Length: 240
Image 1 (spheres, rainbow, N blue to C red):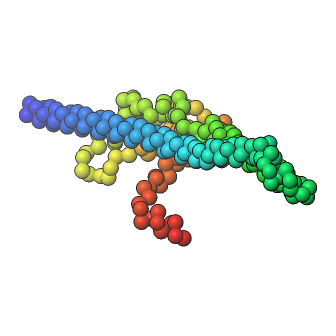
Image 2: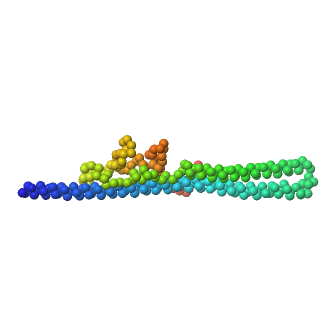
Image 3: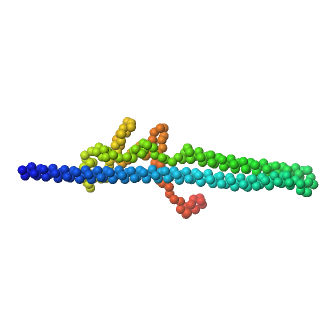
């Protein structure tokens, strides 16, 4: 009886220990998956903000060109008006009416040349403004789009407790402080050859927000980040 009682006590202790280890590792798995989800959501948010910064830079550059061209429009229109007034009403001045023919010819050719060049300047400024707006719109609509995640990327962020059940007994009953940090397997449904079982923390296949040749490609859209330019750095760059 003592032997049976000892075995029962040993089995109860082993069962309680296994239960605690199972609950601990399940909580550990839940915590890691929540941290992974928060990290991936922050990464998606940061890459959207980064590309939003790129789009804002394009708008600023287009606005810079358009504002300068509007100033050229105003100045060109005023000078063009002065040229027309001199050509029409200026011909009635006394010194022009009694001037020799060759001076009148030089005067008329100078006004005609000025009128032509001013018309050309106004037309080129209008063309530059329209070209800048068109090129900016083309950049915003075709090249610098916001990296909005697709359905596959969003689905790759989820985690199920059934994935924890497939980790194996060794990981489900891991004793704390006896090994390195736990590395969970990310189980995914089969979507192609060799794509049903992915190791490490996260699903790298669905990290990018770009599609190349109808396939999602791994690409770091954050890079090294965007460093702020201090005043001394800006001065040093301007003097080079």
